[in-house]
Image (cartoon, rainbow, N blue to C red):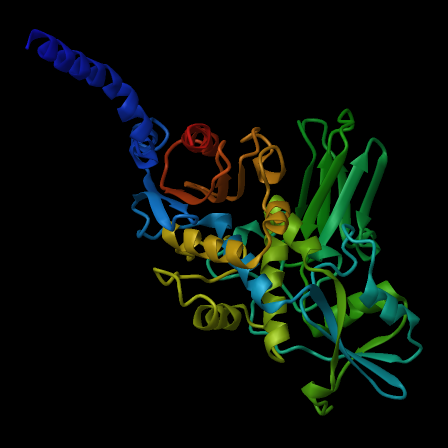
Length: 445
């Protein structure tokens, strides 16, 4: 009897000693994430902010963590994820450069919103080659464009800032003037702005750094600098795109041959036009996502519209996407532009997880990993050095966002979205706090 009791006591003691180890092995990832999320939410960076978090395991089709993921947030440049998804659905594998119709003596051309025309980032220029080679008269046909030069809810005082070029049917040079100074050498392109009527240079010895600007209502640019400043300056300042006549003049100055505008009485069947393509779509998508290029994003939605109809309308493209390709979203977004510059954009974290999950089902992972920046690259160049995330950043005053894919140490791919609004600290502080949270998820799973 004593031996039986001893054996029973020994078994109980063994089980008791093993219990912590057993508990550790069966702890759900969700339990740990709740702890790390609590540290994030109650930390100094986010304690006063509006925060939404969604972590999803597409392999098991289950959510690991949800916190206010059904609430709406201003997503800033995370909006570009929806723009990218639109491009995947509507643009095919190549960017549409222009529509054209040839007769015996005339080449009619119509813009389709391609932002790569004469952009220094692209050496191959099929549209320029076509226009340069033709010996026919070039006639520009106005596109039906409902967009304004800026998107709804944009900062109109940012007209001279590099990140907000004007939008139009036929961008040239990225719709920016490029000002360069190195010591005594100063230049501005395109060359049409190189005369004193368009470009003023002024030495001001009290300046600590060079300043570029543009008049609000004219294409008059300025550069102010101190002579002692020998730093290389390369600045981009948006120019006013103007009307269809201004566009024709810009093309004429570039081609060094006459370009006229089609008469309103000219009758041309839209169905008679062919499309000239310029380059693979990923050559645009990758820089759009890596450096968060607002201009590329806006023009992507405009190109989508031009491919769908004989008109260019961002709002119509967005409505078409919502009706035909985004009905699966759990919460209908308020989506107004392609870049996320607008404060009118409102999305939920679960919306981003849903569209990212759909994207992963449709697009090969290798391609997605190239398009989305990872740690040490693009807007993530100072973060996530272990390169376990492939994600899009977003930043506006008071807004920080990060949505994308996280590959854990054990190789499990998760889809996540962390949206932060109304914080009262620096964006860097918020990003570092989110980085610590996601690093825990990567390291422990």
